[in-house]
Image 1 (cartoon, rainbow, N blue to C red):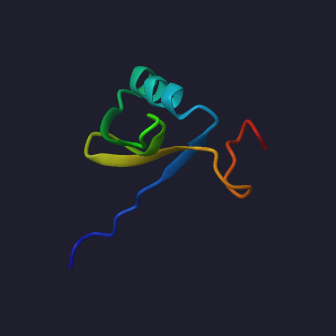
Image 2: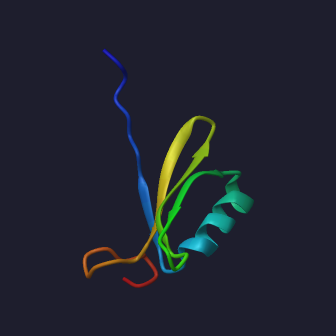
Length: 69
């Protein structure tokens, strides 16, 4: 049996700025960035020491960044 995995997600108003800030401030590295035809990020993941984190922009009414709340 494998260990359980915890994969947190963080929500920001500006996902591109968040990717840059998380890399600079904490050393996270982008591991996956999926964009649409217009270049908007649809899904992003970063890693740090083997752990991964999803980074997203606000979407829908129920998904807001702490700044918006």
